[in-house]
Image (cartoon, rainbow, N blue to C red; front, side, top):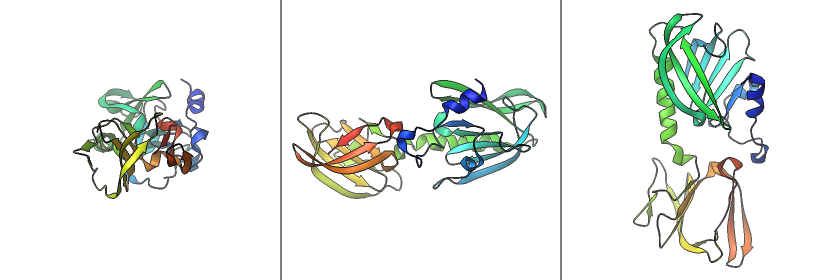
Length: 249
């Protein structure tokens, strides 16, 4: 794929609005410099100088920034040549031998990604000899990101309820538990229990705990109250990225 085509593929969906979190989900090439700035809630974990984008810009030295949402590479010569790779798009991370223009044959980091139905491979080489930071930092952060999906992703029919109580995530707190809440996804409705925490809202059916839904606040596009044949209902609109569902309780 050419960079022009890849740029066209990576534009964030307008359906989720300008403040939607795209940094951890998308791959973007040669973005505007303001898109390299850390968004609210994003923080830098490591910053490495002297890293070559071996596959896309071989022979071009740059800097690599590892955040809690993505890996950013910026050319030292031309900052408009850059990459933003979200951890949610990463499929696998490996170290293999590569032939580089600046260091010859050496160990490099291979990142296989998938975004918008297309696969991309990135190869990064640390020009500082005998420094494992490039490999260890990105691998550790990506594993931590993958292990924390329940904080970010809408989940249906998950193993999140035990003995009619919500299995809490680390540092999650229940603010309210409401019994007798109907899920109006079907014509007759399903009676269950509703949890409100500092991370998400969760509903499960009283007759079947595995019939449940977990909706983190980050995946909510809007919340409103509407009339239904059961009375007033809480309506949750989820983001386009998480399916664009409308949930009614």
